[in-house]
Image (cartoon, rainbow, N blue to C red; front, side, top):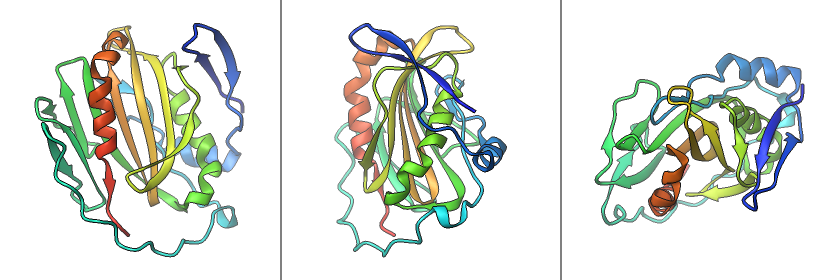
Amino acid sequence: MRLKIRRHHREGDTSTGLIPRALSRRWLIAAGLAVGALAVGIGVVVGGAAGDRVGSGFSPPAPQPPPAPAVPDATPGFVRFLDGRGRFSIDFPRDWKRLATPDAELLAARGRVASLLVRSVPLRFRVERRDLSKVEALTDEIVASGSKVKLLAESRQIELGGLPGYFYFYSFRDPKTRRRGTHSHYFLFQGTTMITIVLQALPDRYFERFVTDFDRIAASFRAAPR
């Protein structure tokens, strides 16, 4: 199986590319069981993830790192969200409204034009930093499951708040309003948990207005030491 993502570059060149690695049959069966509704902001669906144990393909647990420094106070003008299971914290602007959502840890929005969604997904395998290349096909699959996705930059490996992962920046078509929006989408791996952070601007012209807030939200993320 080969997945197609339409890649749109900032310089205005548009080309069609293939995701570099296809999921194995075992990955597809496992991911298909749980790739579902990551409802982002105003109801955009971009997918979830889980998987089957891949045996010796993944590394054994790494030695536990030393305790991290104390988490600083919330970003000025922001409020802090603490995950109920003690896994992470993240800040969002004080003038954003926190909304109820049954299938995510946090959903906060500024009207209908900007939003933050944080969700954790249990995995049936452990992902260490050295395993990232083995889950890239899965994160590609999740992003490609969105509506009319166009990459606005190449995906890349990152470390955020002490966790390794991948970052994607892309535009999409909202299935309800039919307008195009943007997602800054982080996939972070904490042992057997995948944490996703999606920062949405809808329509896409609002991205420049909120980019500073988006950057500050992402920079505030802190994983609890394990």
